[in-house]
Length: 154
Image 1 (tube, rainbow, N blue to C red):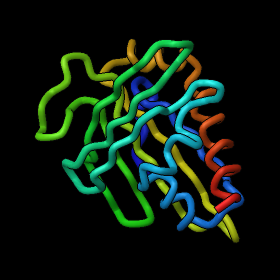
Image 2: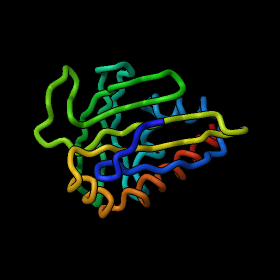
Image 3: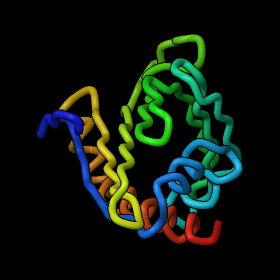
């Protein structure tokens, strides 16, 4: 578990009716990311993963006709159990000019499925409030539902 700061962290836990190994695979292989990692009808148009601490997690989104490039790195990779990535740095530990968040994804066995916990940390209470107002719970909740539906097809 991750210690929470109510001023800068947003989090939720959900049961996904798919095995932990499939959830892990979806989050760690670039061919899977476009199938769930942004609420439809928006799209992930590219994904590049180097799954190691300091390795890249880069995505390109198309949102209402706008292209959004997202570069980041993994801060922690615990095989099958935890991923931590941030946009505060890009590969080579190059600082981002205006970082937004660090995401912590925890995967635990939960019966025949997965206990899926998402925690997103922000650099300030204002950034956290902005993310919540942007629809953190609906957006990341939709991503969890899309992940579960997609993983069930594998």
